[in-house]
Image (cartoon, rainbow, N blue to C red; front, side, top):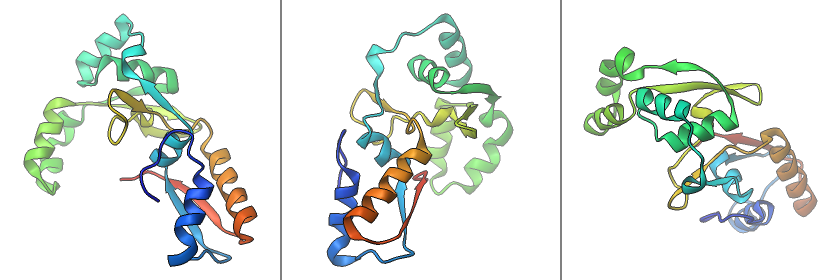
Length: 172
């Protein structure tokens, strides 16, 4: 569907993209990454506008995360604990990595992950993500993923008169 910008109409983008090459039919499942939904819903955080506490600094020192990211993680979720991934799984992760050197660099940079609960789901780092986000911005998960999926499904049905399912999925 191309690069998505904040406040884009995802229903239009999906329907317009699928109309010719892949017309939707009843029973299709449309899978959309949470990143795309988050950007379209303008769920972006300007890293320079984040207030960092002493707690955020301490957790950042342990995890290797940016303290601003830690602050957003705590704002977006309930933090359950941290997994020192570099200490407990480094050998296995590097051994099975497509690019072991890059995997080792990532583990050296961020040796631990925060385990969080958000919207009744467990995830790492509350789904806060810098990758494929505008420069200096963090993307956070949709505020209500079930509602986002429902709106997309209903919008697609209204535009195409097809009964589809919509699934929001992580891009990895």
